[in-house]
Length: 198
Image: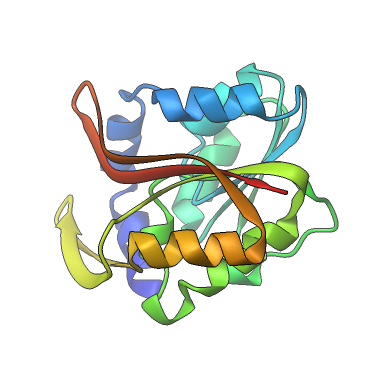
């Protein structure tokens, strides 16, 4: 959404400072442990590439990162992280001839328009290789709201947890873990899911 794109462009310096001081959460490590060694991973809403794309690169994966924010992608490219390519792209516009061994959407799906939330899972399924893994964070309750971060407004939305789980099962995903109220050090997420394309 253009609101989020413009806001992320405006907060880039605060974002760099914040992300450069974060750690890799355990579910991301678990995701990397599942994906084929040296596989290819799509990072939806990759931001500056720090710390997630950098971590996955250090584990010898090849990463394609997409983000709507031009400033985020400029910064990501400037990091010169090995085995990475970064594109300014809306997820719904993104196409690839490659099928990905893993797709990660860490703190990004909740920025998508509510009317397009249902489309996410079919598109991810299409982009994944058979047996590929999908890790994402999400809210538990159906919601749509505007919130502030670093003094700028951001749009958020999500569908209910049960609806998403039913939808994914219908599409052909197998859920490997579903963690509610995840807390690690000072980090908190409402819901984290790791699923596999059958």
